[in-house]
Image (cartoon, rainbow, N blue to C red; front, side, top):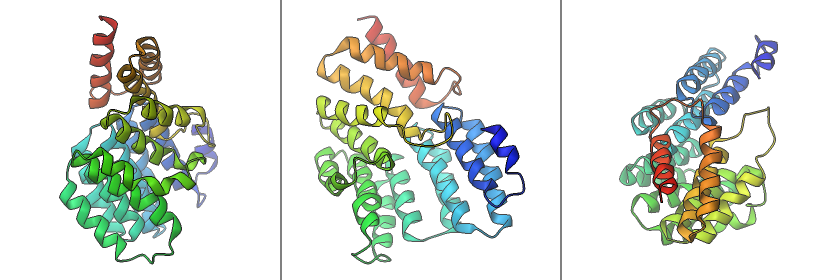
Length: 260
């Protein structure tokens, strides 16, 4: 991917390659690299006055940070993203990040602000973006059944790999509700269809789905499958930053499972 990036140097698309590199690094747990690549992409976008693109890049990084437990960097990224763009897509993404980071009240306020900007006919907003924010808010409030209810509009889109981040969130909701089999099904769907893109540039949901599957299999009592899924995740993250909270949790869970 680095070779492709060098080929695009000076090209208007260069900032998007930096964003892909950031996503690839985050999907392997390498957040120091992800932050560097995101900053490079944001700087390029801002030089071209592409504030909306810059905001989106920071928002994607914030989402990745939140889902692995890097909550302070995620909140800082959200603040930066919203300074650059306060449109509905940026708002619901920020709402999701804050909810995953534990701030359901602020997340609810941002989601409400986004709804006020969008007509009812905006299909993808009401079918994917808003339900994801609402589901994350319900999960932060420890209401997984309400989160699953909020995600119902996703059903019409879930066959597309573009819906993988939403499927990941639904898998988390099933897991929180004690629905191990349903959670495993959602996580497996993500693993089975990583989507198109440059080599190794999978979204973080595709990487974390392996950990989700490990936890879901343990919930259903399939210890052998759980062990394999933990091993898959830990192998994928073998070069990850050592202090990522979700990695530390996964290692502790796997050690406990291996000792049982």
